Image 1 (cartoon, rainbow, N blue to C red):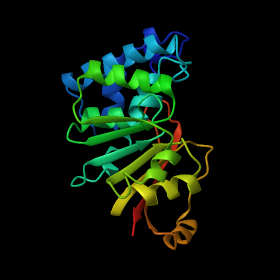
Image 2: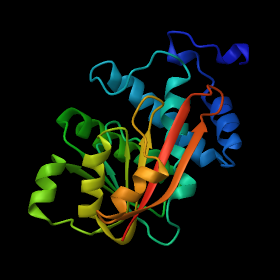
Image 3: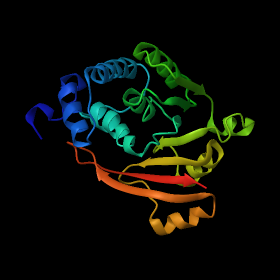
Length: 231
C-alpha cells in the first residue's frame, strides 16, 4: 500500500480522488469529474453528520472511499440494464444505492430506511447532491410490506448486509416483479449461499443467478454478492 494511503485515525488525510480513481479503475469503472465531485461532497456531508449522528464507523482514511463507496459500486455490473427501478432496503447512510445512482443517473432509486436520523441525513444529502429520481421511504420494511403498495414494483432489490438471508429473500419476493433480481451484498464473515443451498430457495420462488466472491481493491477485504432471480 502506498504511504499516502496508510490508514490513520483522521479521514481528512485521505486523497479521495486518487484512491477512487485507482480502485474504480481496478473494477473497470471510469469516474469523470462529475462523479468525483459528487463523491467528494458525499464524503464531506458524511463526515459532518457523523460527528452528531452515528451513520458509519470511520477508523481509516480508506473506510469511506473503499469500504463504502467502492464496495457499493461492486454491484454495478450486476444491475439490470433494462430494468431501472431499484429498491435499496435498509440503506443506512445511502449504501449501496446512492453511489450506484451517481454512476447510473438513469436509475429510479428508492431508499428504504427506518431510522429517522438517517432519513434526515439522506434527505439533506440528496438535496445537496442534486440527484433527481431518488425517493426516500421512512418506514420499517415490515410496515411497507403490510400495506402492499409497493408489491412487485421493482426490477432490482439490493441490500448491503442489513438483514439475514432468509429475511432478505422474503422481502425480495414481496417487492420484486417476476423476473426481477435480488442482490445480497455480504461481508467476509457473513453467511453465504452455496449453489447447492441456492437450489433450495428455487422452491421458494428464486433461481440462483450468480455467487460472486471477490476482494475490494487496495484493501483486499473479502466480499461476496449473491444474485437471485425471482421466478
